[in-house]
Length: 98
Image: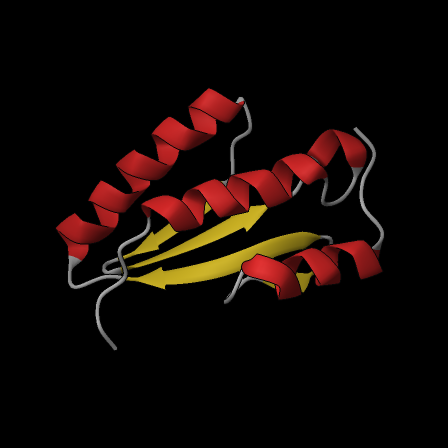
């Protein structure tokens, strides 16, 4: 699967992926939770979706925050797989009230 053009990535993010940003050939979003265990539970739910998709994000956990970064390394950029997984990740996220 070929990587998407920058314009296609931006259009996909503007469509139905609020909070996702496109930078340095990847899409990223930070999720904030009420505490550490809620963040870890999110990572567990995310991991199930990623494994089902056979596509695995880069993750950073900082206590109650999880930074998710998606790109398809073999294609050198963002593909439809990354956009689809971003939607799946959003479906399992339960961020804390701001």
